[in-house]
Length: 334
Image (cartoon, rainbow, N blue to C red; front, side, top):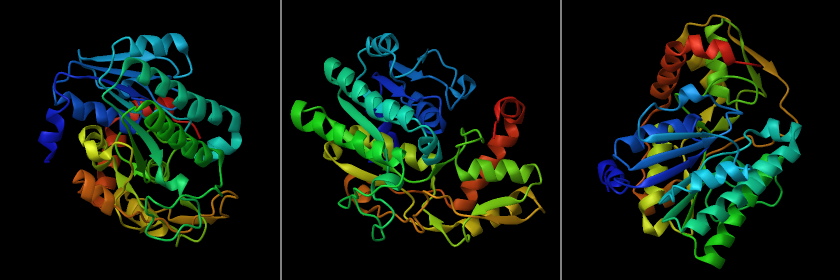
């Protein structure tokens, strides 16, 4: 299936996106609007995102609230969505170390509640945003394949993402809820505001734009599988319509390794930053030296093929931050 064929499945449908104001959710919304759906409902408490990031469109309904808020969830599910994309999360490893109970509530109980409501209204497909950087642990062999799971995880965020997968499997196996689990890897792209607990790429670009040296926690030889958000959106939408994805966990990644020192150098080059790089001690919880996902399952089942190379993606993020500088400056916090 090409992307236009994938989109055609969403024409005339009602779609609920939890956490829809974030980077992935806002880009997912933009893509879905091309399909001319009946309605897109977004619920987001804006704890890590901003309403201005949501596409303004007559078919988009925004509900400002938490997935833990029964009243707001009842309103969201009163539209009886055909599809649910569960992206809402208490995000980031360090944030979960600092606030483990909040992480459990949002990523554990919040996911359970979302599954319960989805089961009650009988959705056609429930796609859960899991984290390939979480469930495999720090000692898994490369490339990371879907049949390897670790019970020795390093942060509450990782633990609760695995918990979310277990709840998804339970609802699929016990209730027959059509669930598909997307394991995202180091997603980046337009729509993510820099700040505390945010990802390395928007933060590096922000610091570089302000002529600051880019702080590498470690040696710089560490690698990650950075995946551009448009590729993530493509894979996520495929998971919503490909029947063979039901009951499966599938890596959505670039399938390539990028060294952090190379990432820093590229960003300094793109932004013209002369401040260079500084090295800091690795964070206590950060035990994963290398990350590279196998995307063979995604290719075979979904027809998934990432298209955006790293430097092109970085330039697009840089342009987005420049274009939205006036709004970002008002909210960015470190």
